[in-house]
Length: 157
Image (cartoon, rainbow, N blue to C red; front, top):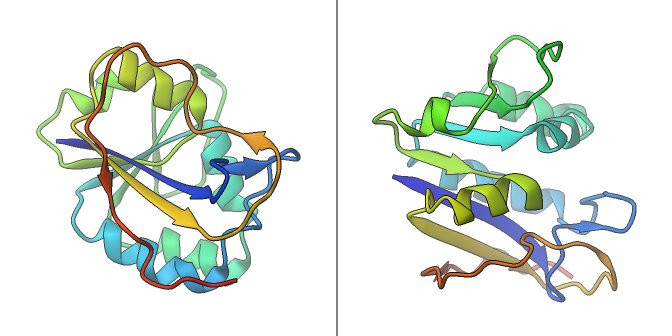
């Protein structure tokens, strides 16, 4: 099973116009780690990997120490992530396994997976903050996709 997971602002953005995810409160992090407990593997794009590396040291360390397989999708054959992360060059390299996978990524990987019909479920969490503009989680998608809308555990303003 492949679950697409996105945290968005109340106006539907996953990052602000500068690519920052600062609208997501740090207090939300334990809830995210709790969601990960149900999965064997987290799949992310390279830009999401970079964003995680720019989180505070405590958050980054808690993620890196979390017992889940961490896989980065990149076309760049010269990309070398930190220890504890694996690389695949196409999502199918890992998705065709029998793993229960959660994907957290941006529009490029999200759209690819939706267009290829590789997503079984979407978890969509909304942070109650308007950021005005930025990066949307999806581009144009032709097919209807079932969405599991799960409220955030803690609403922080």
